[in-house]
Length: 187
Image 1 (spheres, rainbow, N blue to C red):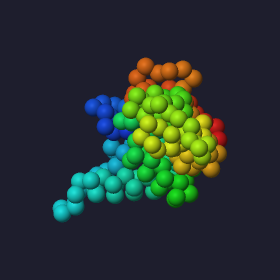
Image 2: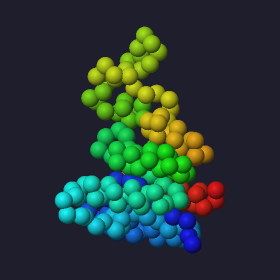
Image 3: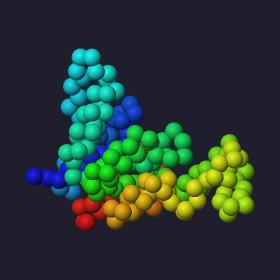
């Protein structure tokens, strides 16, 4: 029986989410895995239960049954990964599952903060940390995303894979995703 990978990420919000999920499952199968895409969660809403609760329950059940999680950590509606994806990554880590992640955006978290005019200028604080214009410290560990995300992956023996070059369509490009699946297969 093929080992399964829960495919977390913000692709579920795209209008072509089903097609992207099918392509991700195809790539997983090419490397001997069963890809579990959240839209394929066997959702069965119960009377009196909200749709959001049904989605959460179905996705957590799917995640619990997976051998691994592969999280798309490409920044979503901001400078960091999709918060739902991060919840799933944290849940998988807490379950003791190996966690893997990738981002289609290169560079560090602090570089993304520094690219947003609303946060400029960045300044050095008396405590040695960098601060944004909003008066809040900017996490500057040279990591692709928040340290809690990056360190969970590090504890699994991986990091956040990023593309070698900038990608044209960061929401749909599957090159780095495939590199990550290949790395999981080789591990």
